[in-house]
Image 1 (tube, one colour):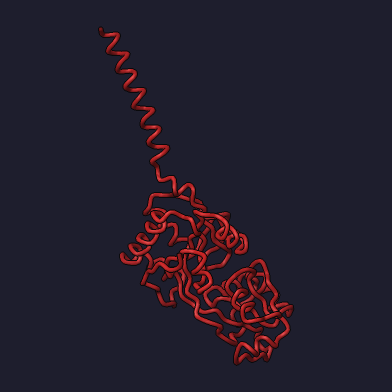
Image 2 (image 1 turned 90 degrees about the horizontal axis):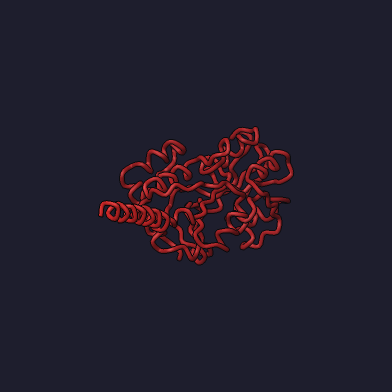
Length: 266
């Protein structure tokens, strides 16, 4: 009898262990493992730092992942690659993305996580004056970030004098080397990028503002609603409890903090 009881207890223990393993494997937040989270070299919003993602938006996304208990690696990739992955694959997060009507038809976006402007810059002392977009169309070359909003907006306007680079840093270097006449870039990252190129803000001058630039976290089509809603609600909470403001002030101490949160697009 004792032997039978021991065997029964052994079976129960084994069954419990296998049930526990099954539950952990299938009920753990697997959507986090499926999520591919991408960002770009765009300091101070996002950038690689000794092989690890860092920056304002990176800290915001890391806080979302922490609160959702879904640790996931954030990969820094060229924007063009991230853009194509977001277009082609469900369960992809790409940040940060400028809001445009065209993009709202392709992706879900939550935010904003940063506010700024998209501007034209020239070398200091170049004498270039831009009063409107038509003036910009007359210069020899304009440097833009490949597949980013600057290139997309200007090509939509019919610009044919664009010099697309794989990173903003390349465009900044081309501007200072005289290979392009204007550099079109976000004000939030222009100075940091210029410093990475070995120059200072005194080496360039702002000549024209193209448009306001509201930056969001983009989520690809086909991603489950539960994931989208969990990210949205967590971002709202981070803003409500002042965590977002602390992160924002750390990286952009003199900029307006976007405290509202919305979901747009799909």
